[in-house]
Amino acid sequence: MATPTDENFNDYKRAERKALEILAEMKATSPKQVDIELALLVAIFELHKGAVPADKIAAIVQGHLKQLVPYYAGKASPTIN
Image 1: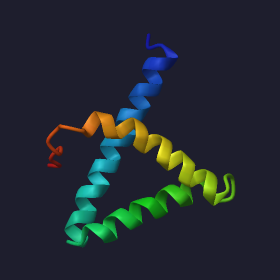
Image 2: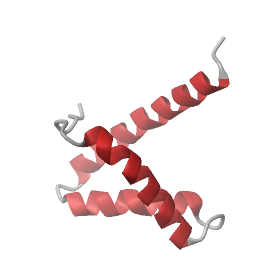
Image 3: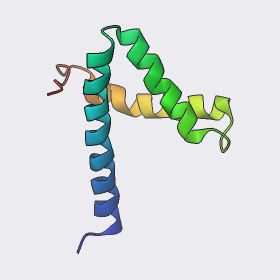
């Protein structure tokens, strides 16, 4: 039986896989990275809309970026199939 931590990680990995699928679809829709970047950021704000003020959403994003940057620093960009 999976622990709550294991299940949380599994939930995250399922969401991550879906996000990468959506990203692949977005790349097929628009060749402009800035369009995709902004659309993904809008999705994050929409996720929290009505529950968290915009400045707090930005802080959440910044916090996640601080964790992700070391992971991706020095690594080749992952490819999306």
